[in-house]
Amino acid sequence: MSSYDLKDVEEMADGDQDFILVVVKTFLEEIPPDVTAMNEAIDSDNAKLAYSYAHKMKPNLKLFGLELMPQITIIEQWSKQGKNKAEVPGAGKVITGKVEQVCDELKEDFNL
Image (cartoon, rainbow, N blue to C red):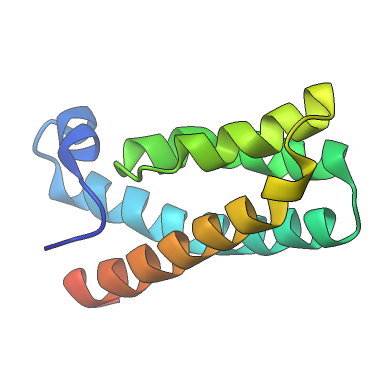
């Protein structure tokens, strides 16, 4: 069973398999570097930068059906309200692990 869900991507593509492939490739190209940059911002205690990367990734994580909104919210609240600072590194690790797993699955499933 996949760690991702392409239902929303397929709905958006309206049956266009080439479009789905473009969306998958874009995810694979853009999300891993953003996750790395978000984690670097967390490690350097730069809440504002961590927020910008977490917020930027949010629509794509949702589009691929990744259940990471609680972790994104932790990072957003840290940046906006100074809350949950102790939980932020763990949230970053969960996001990283899930994105790595999904990227591996997408590469295999789409022969990339």
